[in-house]
Image 1 (cartoon, rainbow over the protein chains, first blue to last red):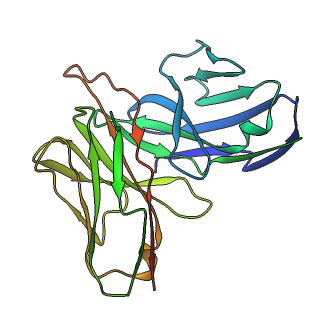
Image 2 (image 1 turned 90 degrees about the horizontal axis):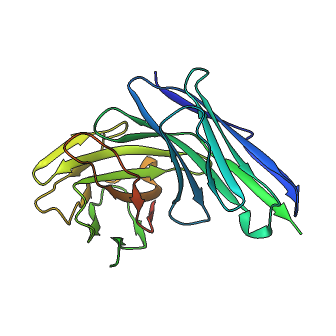
Length: 111
Length: 116
């Protein structure tokens, strides 16, 4: 059965800390991996990763994919209270674009 | 450009009632999806559509029906509501080209449904 596993499930840090969120997957017909941020409403898109070893960056956030070991990490440097959210990892399976989601990592950033 | 819109935002149903959750997108996306999200869980795919007139089941389709008569609209129908259908429902859309190149999904604001 296809699955996406995120760890840790929750994390509490202080402002300025650096965090690493993990996502491992076992999905047939893998197409790409996506990261979303969810703040009590709709998920908002962060990154899409298709190739191994190519880091994607946006400000303080970065992500990389390892298709050999079947995992991805999302790094957030110099965390701010506005980074508090649930971070969802999802894998695109097949040509229909269906997403298999992990349960998410709940990040709380304390001032 | 409103993106993906969903109505209603909240709804309480009694067991056995039926309702339709509305979803519309104005981005001319060909692919549309319905997900449900239970507390502490990721999203699970209910149904999806790759174009007008074409729909298919996702992971958890039981108790739901969909139709796609236009590119813009993708309503989700709940027949004979049950407490197990209490959840937050998200509609999403994306564009996929003929070569199968896939782009990210854009999500609507969600509908919070409670069945009592």
